[in-house]
Image (cartoon, rainbow, N blue to C red; front, side, top):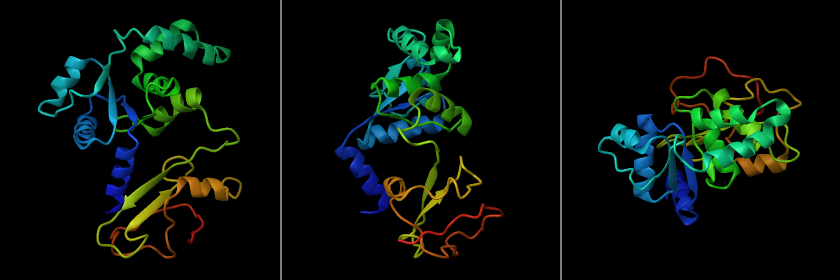
Length: 222
């Protein structure tokens, strides 16, 4: 079983509910079709059901849950909770309701906060900063964690480098210029967020176009 298949199998073994706020983006709808067909997760799509199904065309996504912020009865209750969380920062109750009705990213994060969904996937049409903003305002970081970081897992077929062709690139979207104060993370957090460490000098013909610029970061060994 390859890496991606092992990730899918772990997901099937512990089915979660994932909210996808970018429901009018065709790649999101194709992913929804695949996830539901393969039994990887339950899916919530934010938006008008009829409009989303029309956009999906022949894709089978009818088994997804659809939450329309214009009509869903839970919006007012979620807005009340968002207001209580953010009123000290100047958010009004009216603004909280408008955010949830007009900004799918905020509604998606509130669904996670309230346990209606287990996670949210976004970024197909929204910038990283826009995806992170509601997450940091509503979910916040874990206790004792001040730095938010990210990484990509890249799988290269028929490659002897990395960990059997698997590479982790970090930090690729948030902490682009790490300093001795924020890199590397503590060993416990490093272990918890990483599956594989890249070997020394991993660059190879598997990646024919080398990066033009990259911050100086440590090279980790297993």
